Image (cartoon, rainbow, N blue to C red; front, side, top):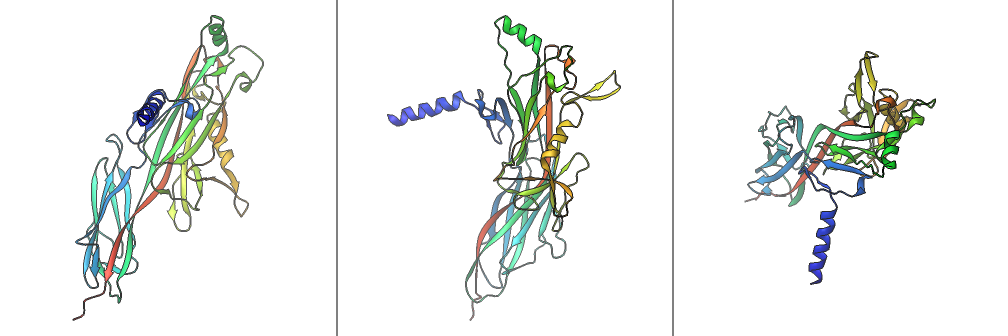
Length: 365
Protein backbone atom coordinates (compact mmCIF):
# COMPACT_ATOMS: atom_id res chain seq x y z
CA UNK A 1 0.00 0.00 0.00
CA UNK A 2 2.89 2.33 0.79
CA UNK A 3 4.29 1.78 -2.72
CA UNK A 4 0.95 2.84 -4.18
CA UNK A 5 1.08 6.18 -2.39
CA UNK A 6 4.72 6.67 -3.40
CA UNK A 7 3.74 6.08 -7.03
CA UNK A 8 0.86 8.56 -6.80
CA UNK A 9 3.13 11.16 -5.21
CA UNK A 10 5.74 10.76 -7.95
CA UNK A 11 3.07 10.95 -10.62
CA UNK A 12 1.70 14.20 -9.18
CA UNK A 13 5.19 15.69 -8.96
CA UNK A 14 5.88 14.90 -12.62
CA UNK A 15 2.43 16.04 -13.75
CA UNK A 16 2.49 19.28 -11.79
CA UNK A 17 6.00 20.05 -12.92
CA UNK A 18 7.16 19.93 -16.46
CA UNK A 19 9.98 19.57 -18.91
CA UNK A 20 10.77 18.77 -22.48
CA UNK A 21 11.70 15.16 -23.06
CA UNK A 22 15.15 15.23 -24.71
CA UNK A 23 15.21 13.81 -28.22
CA UNK A 24 11.44 13.47 -28.50
CA UNK A 25 10.44 17.12 -28.84
CA UNK A 26 7.64 16.53 -26.31
CA UNK A 27 6.91 19.26 -23.81
CA UNK A 28 5.30 18.41 -20.49
CA UNK A 29 3.44 21.55 -19.38
CA UNK A 30 3.62 23.54 -16.14
CA UNK A 31 7.41 23.53 -15.92
CA UNK A 32 8.47 24.99 -12.56
CA UNK A 33 11.23 27.52 -12.27
CA UNK A 34 14.21 25.19 -12.81
CA UNK A 35 15.45 27.46 -15.60
CA UNK A 36 14.78 30.69 -13.76
CA UNK A 37 11.36 31.49 -15.20
CA UNK A 38 11.87 30.24 -18.74
CA UNK A 39 9.86 27.62 -20.56
CA UNK A 40 12.48 25.39 -22.19
CA UNK A 41 12.04 23.18 -25.25
CA UNK A 42 14.97 20.97 -26.23
CA UNK A 43 15.28 18.73 -29.23
CA UNK A 44 17.37 15.59 -29.59
CA UNK A 45 20.94 15.57 -28.25
CA UNK A 46 22.86 12.89 -30.19
CA UNK A 47 22.29 13.01 -33.94
CA UNK A 48 24.77 10.35 -35.11
CA UNK A 49 24.79 6.95 -33.43
CA UNK A 50 26.62 3.64 -33.86
CA UNK A 51 23.59 1.43 -33.43
CA UNK A 52 25.38 -1.89 -33.66
CA UNK A 53 28.92 -3.26 -33.80
CA UNK A 54 29.51 -6.94 -34.64
CA UNK A 55 32.38 -9.26 -35.45
CA UNK A 56 31.46 -11.73 -38.21
CA UNK A 57 31.45 -14.72 -38.12
CA UNK A 58 32.72 -14.73 -34.54
CA UNK A 59 34.41 -12.59 -31.92
CA UNK A 60 37.08 -15.29 -31.62
CA UNK A 61 39.57 -15.72 -34.45
CA UNK A 62 42.81 -17.66 -34.98
CA UNK A 63 46.04 -16.31 -36.42
CA UNK A 64 45.89 -16.39 -40.23
CA UNK A 65 42.09 -16.20 -40.26
CA UNK A 66 39.88 -13.20 -41.02
CA UNK A 67 36.85 -11.55 -39.52
CA UNK A 68 34.63 -8.70 -40.67
CA UNK A 69 34.05 -5.89 -38.24
CA UNK A 70 30.67 -4.42 -39.11
CA UNK A 71 29.20 -1.16 -37.77
CA UNK A 72 25.65 0.07 -38.34
CA UNK A 73 25.60 3.89 -38.21
CA UNK A 74 22.36 5.86 -38.03
CA UNK A 75 21.47 9.52 -38.43
CA UNK A 76 18.83 10.25 -35.78
CA UNK A 77 17.93 13.74 -37.01
CA UNK A 78 14.36 14.81 -37.59
CA UNK A 79 13.36 14.67 -41.28
CA UNK A 80 13.33 18.46 -41.72
CA UNK A 81 17.02 18.86 -40.93
CA UNK A 82 19.69 19.08 -43.61
CA UNK A 83 22.02 16.05 -43.98
CA UNK A 84 25.28 15.69 -42.10
CA UNK A 85 27.83 15.42 -44.88
CA UNK A 86 31.01 15.06 -42.86
CA UNK A 87 30.60 11.91 -40.76
CA UNK A 88 33.84 9.96 -40.32
CA UNK A 89 33.85 6.42 -38.97
CA UNK A 90 37.33 5.25 -38.03
CA UNK A 91 38.87 2.02 -36.80
CA UNK A 92 41.17 3.47 -34.15
CA UNK A 93 42.51 0.52 -32.16
CA UNK A 94 43.25 -3.06 -33.23
CA UNK A 95 45.83 -3.81 -30.49
CA UNK A 96 48.44 -4.32 -33.22
CA UNK A 97 47.07 -7.80 -33.86
CA UNK A 98 45.27 -7.26 -37.17
CA UNK A 99 45.94 -6.11 -40.68
CA UNK A 100 43.14 -4.24 -42.46
CA UNK A 101 42.73 -5.74 -45.94
CA UNK A 102 39.13 -5.01 -46.89
CA UNK A 103 37.99 -2.16 -49.10
CA UNK A 104 34.26 -2.12 -48.41
CA UNK A 105 32.80 1.17 -47.19
CA UNK A 106 30.15 3.68 -48.19
CA UNK A 107 33.05 5.36 -49.93
CA UNK A 108 36.20 3.49 -50.96
CA UNK A 109 39.17 3.40 -48.63
CA UNK A 110 42.12 5.48 -49.56
CA UNK A 111 45.46 3.67 -49.37
CA UNK A 112 46.35 2.75 -45.78
CA UNK A 113 43.20 4.53 -44.61
CA UNK A 114 40.79 3.01 -42.09
CA UNK A 115 38.26 5.85 -42.18
CA UNK A 116 34.90 5.91 -43.95
CA UNK A 117 33.58 9.35 -44.85
CA UNK A 118 29.82 9.48 -45.12
CA UNK A 119 27.07 11.89 -46.06
CA UNK A 120 24.09 10.91 -43.97
CA UNK A 121 20.53 12.07 -44.51
CA UNK A 122 18.06 12.30 -41.59
CA UNK A 123 16.81 8.88 -40.44
CA UNK A 124 19.21 7.11 -42.84
CA UNK A 125 21.40 4.13 -41.95
CA UNK A 126 24.85 3.26 -43.31
CA UNK A 127 26.82 0.04 -43.09
CA UNK A 128 30.57 0.28 -42.55
CA UNK A 129 32.84 -2.75 -42.32
CA UNK A 130 36.50 -3.69 -42.26
CA UNK A 131 38.11 -7.00 -43.14
CA UNK A 132 40.68 -7.84 -40.47
CA UNK A 133 43.36 -10.51 -40.88
CA UNK A 134 44.65 -11.81 -37.56
CA UNK A 135 48.44 -11.70 -37.23
CA UNK A 136 50.58 -14.48 -35.82
CA UNK A 137 50.60 -14.71 -32.02
CA UNK A 138 51.86 -17.35 -29.58
CA UNK A 139 49.29 -17.07 -26.83
CA UNK A 140 45.56 -16.38 -26.76
CA UNK A 141 45.14 -12.60 -26.46
CA UNK A 142 42.02 -10.45 -25.94
CA UNK A 143 41.56 -7.05 -27.56
CA UNK A 144 38.91 -4.37 -27.38
CA UNK A 145 38.74 -3.01 -30.90
CA UNK A 146 37.53 0.57 -30.98
CA UNK A 147 35.40 2.45 -33.51
CA UNK A 148 35.26 6.24 -33.42
CA UNK A 149 32.62 8.41 -35.05
CA UNK A 150 33.36 12.10 -35.65
CA UNK A 151 31.40 14.88 -37.30
CA UNK A 152 31.00 18.64 -37.12
CA UNK A 153 27.66 20.14 -36.34
CA UNK A 154 25.87 23.40 -35.54
CA UNK A 155 23.17 23.74 -32.90
CA UNK A 156 20.81 26.72 -32.80
CA UNK A 157 18.75 28.26 -30.02
CA UNK A 158 16.30 31.15 -29.66
CA UNK A 159 15.20 32.83 -26.44
CA UNK A 160 12.38 35.33 -26.05
CA UNK A 161 12.63 38.43 -23.90
CA UNK A 162 9.66 40.68 -23.12
CA UNK A 163 9.84 44.38 -22.27
CA UNK A 164 6.96 46.31 -20.75
CA UNK A 165 6.31 50.07 -20.64
CA UNK A 166 6.65 51.32 -17.06
CA UNK A 167 3.68 53.69 -17.31
CA UNK A 168 1.49 50.91 -18.71
CA UNK A 169 2.54 48.57 -15.92
CA UNK A 170 1.77 51.19 -13.27
CA UNK A 171 -1.67 51.72 -14.79
CA UNK A 172 -2.43 47.99 -14.68
CA UNK A 173 -1.29 47.77 -11.07
CA UNK A 174 -3.42 50.77 -10.14
CA UNK A 175 -6.44 48.96 -11.61
CA UNK A 176 -5.67 45.91 -9.48
CA UNK A 177 -4.52 43.80 -12.41
CA UNK A 178 -1.44 41.62 -12.48
CA UNK A 179 1.12 41.25 -15.21
CA UNK A 180 3.49 38.35 -15.65
CA UNK A 181 5.46 36.89 -18.51
CA UNK A 182 7.44 33.68 -18.89
CA UNK A 183 10.24 33.68 -21.41
CA UNK A 184 10.77 30.78 -23.79
CA UNK A 185 13.95 29.03 -24.90
CA UNK A 186 13.94 26.73 -27.91
CA UNK A 187 17.08 24.64 -28.56
CA UNK A 188 17.60 22.63 -31.74
CA UNK A 189 19.11 19.22 -32.32
CA UNK A 190 22.73 18.51 -31.49
CA UNK A 191 24.81 17.28 -28.56
CA UNK A 192 26.27 20.70 -27.63
CA UNK A 193 23.55 23.14 -26.61
CA UNK A 194 23.75 26.96 -26.41
CA UNK A 195 21.64 28.11 -23.46
CA UNK A 196 20.19 31.60 -23.02
CA UNK A 197 18.53 32.60 -19.77
CA UNK A 198 16.73 35.88 -19.13
CA UNK A 199 15.42 36.12 -15.58
CA UNK A 200 12.72 38.32 -14.05
CA UNK A 201 10.65 38.97 -17.13
CA UNK A 202 9.11 41.23 -18.20
CA UNK A 203 11.87 43.84 -18.11
CA UNK A 204 10.39 47.21 -17.16
CA UNK A 205 11.35 50.09 -19.49
CA UNK A 206 10.82 53.78 -18.77
CA UNK A 207 9.99 55.11 -22.22
CA UNK A 208 9.13 58.64 -21.05
CA UNK A 209 10.92 61.84 -22.01
CA UNK A 210 13.68 61.97 -19.39
CA UNK A 211 17.29 63.05 -19.24
CA UNK A 212 18.46 59.59 -18.24
CA UNK A 213 20.61 57.41 -20.45
CA UNK A 214 19.22 54.39 -22.26
CA UNK A 215 20.55 52.02 -19.59
CA UNK A 216 18.99 54.10 -16.80
CA UNK A 217 15.61 53.55 -18.41
CA UNK A 218 15.63 49.88 -17.51
CA UNK A 219 17.63 46.77 -18.27
CA UNK A 220 17.76 43.08 -17.50
CA UNK A 221 20.34 40.32 -17.20
CA UNK A 222 20.90 37.65 -19.83
CA UNK A 223 23.09 34.62 -19.05
CA UNK A 224 24.68 32.47 -21.75
CA UNK A 225 26.48 29.13 -21.48
CA UNK A 226 27.18 25.88 -23.34
CA UNK A 227 26.48 22.31 -22.27
CA UNK A 228 27.53 18.95 -23.69
CA UNK A 229 24.32 16.92 -23.49
CA UNK A 230 25.41 14.10 -25.80
CA UNK A 231 27.05 10.73 -25.16
CA UNK A 232 30.46 11.75 -26.56
CA UNK A 233 33.01 14.52 -26.17
CA UNK A 234 33.67 17.84 -27.88
CA UNK A 235 36.78 18.09 -30.03
CA UNK A 236 38.85 20.54 -28.00
CA UNK A 237 42.48 21.60 -28.08
CA UNK A 238 42.77 20.78 -24.39
CA UNK A 239 40.80 18.48 -22.14
CA UNK A 240 38.58 21.23 -20.73
CA UNK A 241 39.19 24.29 -22.91
CA UNK A 242 38.50 25.28 -26.48
CA UNK A 243 39.37 28.25 -28.65
CA UNK A 244 36.33 30.31 -29.63
CA UNK A 245 35.75 32.10 -32.91
CA UNK A 246 32.88 34.51 -33.54
CA UNK A 247 30.56 35.21 -36.42
CA UNK A 248 30.31 34.06 -40.01
CA UNK A 249 34.06 34.17 -40.59
CA UNK A 250 34.83 31.53 -37.97
CA UNK A 251 36.24 28.36 -39.51
CA UNK A 252 36.59 25.24 -37.39
CA UNK A 253 40.01 23.63 -37.50
CA UNK A 254 40.79 20.03 -36.77
CA UNK A 255 44.42 19.02 -36.94
CA UNK A 256 47.05 17.91 -34.46
CA UNK A 257 48.91 21.22 -34.39
CA UNK A 258 46.08 23.73 -34.21
CA UNK A 259 43.46 21.78 -32.35
CA UNK A 260 39.75 22.43 -32.77
CA UNK A 261 37.71 25.55 -32.42
CA UNK A 262 34.19 26.31 -31.24
CA UNK A 263 32.40 28.77 -33.52
CA UNK A 264 29.92 31.00 -31.72
CA UNK A 265 27.35 33.49 -32.91
CA UNK A 266 24.91 35.29 -30.61
CA UNK A 267 22.90 38.44 -31.22
CA UNK A 268 19.78 40.34 -30.27
CA UNK A 269 16.89 41.22 -32.52
CA UNK A 270 17.39 43.87 -35.18
CA UNK A 271 15.06 45.84 -37.43
CA UNK A 272 15.38 47.86 -40.59
CA UNK A 273 14.84 51.45 -39.52
CA UNK A 274 13.30 53.56 -42.28
CA UNK A 275 14.26 56.87 -40.66
CA UNK A 276 17.97 56.10 -40.36
CA UNK A 277 17.94 53.96 -43.53
CA UNK A 278 19.93 51.29 -41.79
CA UNK A 279 19.81 48.50 -39.27
CA UNK A 280 19.39 49.33 -35.60
CA UNK A 281 19.38 46.98 -32.65
CA UNK A 282 16.25 46.26 -30.68
CA UNK A 283 18.23 44.74 -27.82
CA UNK A 284 21.32 46.70 -26.90
CA UNK A 285 22.60 50.14 -27.77
CA UNK A 286 24.65 48.70 -30.64
CA UNK A 287 24.06 45.77 -32.94
CA UNK A 288 27.10 43.96 -31.49
CA UNK A 289 26.51 44.63 -27.80
CA UNK A 290 25.67 41.03 -26.82
CA UNK A 291 28.51 39.60 -28.89
CA UNK A 292 30.93 42.12 -27.39
CA UNK A 293 29.85 41.22 -23.87
CA UNK A 294 30.42 37.50 -24.48
CA UNK A 295 33.78 38.21 -26.10
CA UNK A 296 34.83 40.18 -23.02
CA UNK A 297 34.05 37.19 -20.81
CA UNK A 298 36.05 34.84 -23.04
CA UNK A 299 39.03 37.13 -23.57
CA UNK A 300 42.34 35.68 -22.35
CA UNK A 301 46.06 36.01 -22.93
CA UNK A 302 48.15 33.14 -24.30
CA UNK A 303 51.74 32.40 -23.28
CA UNK A 304 52.94 34.92 -25.87
CA UNK A 305 50.84 37.70 -24.39
CA UNK A 306 48.46 37.67 -27.36
CA UNK A 307 44.72 38.13 -26.95
CA UNK A 308 42.80 34.93 -27.54
CA UNK A 309 39.22 33.85 -26.91
CA UNK A 310 38.51 30.56 -25.18
CA UNK A 311 36.02 28.89 -22.88
CA UNK A 312 36.50 26.31 -20.15
CA UNK A 313 34.21 23.37 -19.56
CA UNK A 314 33.72 22.43 -15.92
CA UNK A 315 32.45 18.90 -16.27
CA UNK A 316 30.08 19.07 -19.22
CA UNK A 317 29.20 22.76 -19.05
CA UNK A 318 30.88 26.15 -19.28
CA UNK A 319 30.33 28.84 -16.65
CA UNK A 320 27.37 31.15 -17.10
CA UNK A 321 28.37 34.42 -18.75
CA UNK A 322 26.06 37.32 -17.70
CA UNK A 323 25.34 40.32 -19.93
CA UNK A 324 23.14 43.38 -19.43
CA UNK A 325 20.45 43.83 -22.07
CA UNK A 326 18.12 46.70 -22.74
CA UNK A 327 16.22 48.29 -25.60
CA UNK A 328 18.06 50.37 -28.17
CA UNK A 329 15.06 52.70 -28.56
CA UNK A 330 12.82 52.74 -25.43
CA UNK A 331 10.18 54.86 -27.20
CA UNK A 332 9.23 51.78 -29.22
CA UNK A 333 7.85 50.07 -26.12
CA UNK A 334 4.33 51.51 -26.15
CA UNK A 335 2.84 48.72 -24.06
CA UNK A 336 4.77 45.45 -24.20
CA UNK A 337 7.02 43.94 -26.84
CA UNK A 338 8.69 40.54 -27.13
CA UNK A 339 11.92 40.07 -29.07
CA UNK A 340 14.30 37.17 -29.72
CA UNK A 341 17.93 36.54 -28.82
CA UNK A 342 19.49 33.95 -31.12
CA UNK A 343 22.59 31.83 -30.69
CA UNK A 344 24.38 29.15 -32.64
CA UNK A 345 27.43 27.06 -31.85
CA UNK A 346 29.52 25.04 -34.32
CA UNK A 347 31.80 22.28 -33.07
CA UNK A 348 33.48 18.95 -33.74
CA UNK A 349 32.00 16.01 -31.87
CA UNK A 350 33.19 12.44 -31.42
CA UNK A 351 32.28 9.27 -29.59
CA UNK A 352 33.48 5.68 -29.48
CA UNK A 353 32.20 2.15 -29.31
CA UNK A 354 34.21 -0.98 -28.49
CA UNK A 355 33.85 -4.69 -29.10
CA UNK A 356 35.91 -7.46 -27.42
CA UNK A 357 37.79 -9.74 -29.83
CA UNK A 358 39.99 -12.72 -28.90
CA UNK A 359 42.85 -13.88 -31.11
CA UNK A 360 44.05 -17.47 -30.66
CA UNK A 361 47.30 -19.02 -31.90
CA UNK A 362 47.27 -20.94 -35.15
CA UNK A 363 46.59 -24.68 -34.76
CA UNK A 364 49.85 -26.49 -35.44
CA UNK A 365 49.55 -30.01 -36.82
